[in-house]
Image (tube, rainbow, N blue to C red; front, side):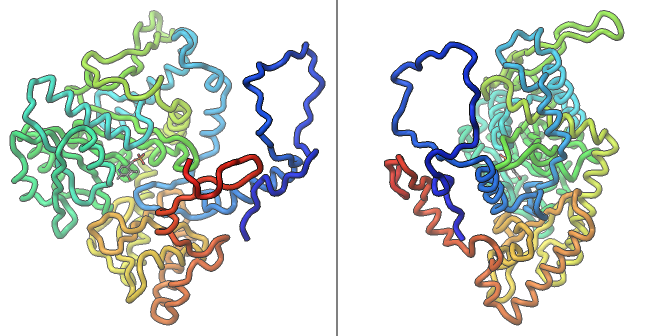
Length: 492
Ligand SMILES: *Cc1c(COP(=O)(O)O)cnc(C)c1O
């Protein structure tokens, strides 16, 4: 059944709110602000609540079921994050307030910068970027600013492994660099020979994901970093996979010059439709002056031992520029701060240990049935081939929805045929993991015995299989309601 629009359940005169009689003099609104053509739905409160609750249940969410969407780290977002981010001291401030009136917020940002620097092994962190992709843009512009500052203008290319996320080449070419793709070897590592042959005086840097998107720790990471450095390039780390490394390995210690963190992946701030992301960037000592500003620093040390220092917003000397209005997504900073504080150092290490354990547990139980092209101990995720006879990864994914599971990431990374990229995260129980394995094995059985079940899946969801190509080609982003002069499908 198609859920009715809120306008369809509207009936004249019904209402959810009754405002009290005003206790201040009324005054007319300016005429040009008033519209007659704005028919609002008229619905009682209970129907509003039911309508939106039903709508919310049409989507899968981490609150309703397992969500092994590889590379996205769909872990549970603790409710306490929501409590702290709603504290009036954080919600009732404005970024244009004088700094002395927002010392608490600045201190939180300062500590978060400091903790992320500690977790990643870096000398400085900016909290500005709005998401991982914008963190990448900041990072690659820092690479550019660094070379330009040294008058080293012949560096034109950025190397990117073929397993990388699509945002990496997009970022590099947006920053004006030529992208050179590096192949992976038969163990899923960057091909060292290919890397060597590209390490020359035109190399600006390498964008490097470790563990990579196959969920594999790069076995030659130190050699890769050395080769790039010897050629005068910088190593940018895509930190989307930090969930495998917390408290175990620090990219800064491995020689990475720059790294973005995805607070909405590793550090439990809401994700996708759930809210804005946040992609802080950490850099090594030689790059702190290039960070986008402002960042928070102690501008006046505390005088007595139990006094507070004074925090202030500072723009680094050779900054690559401003990236975002004000100070980034502050609400996400509060949530990530809370998460780190609640776990502490040892707790964060446990997060990664369990994330890796869960992924290996699933991998071992699934790999006999689905082809595992790189059969090594994985980190927090792994990639299998979703092809079973004439059954495709898409069919497997659609059928998983009938079992109440969100599908894994499909068709990425591109170097695995019919890829299914599975990331369980640390927050799932053994029972959930076992139920997922049962579903995957059941689907493989159906592929042999009754493949039409798979071709026609999903069967239990509010909508069946959508014509995704048609939906993408003929976007319908508005619908008809009273007073809307635009027809469904019409472009704005
Ligand atoms: C998610 C992801 C990104 C991009 O991060 P966003 O926060 O979605 O912009 C980059 N690289 C990898 C490997 C990712 O998984």
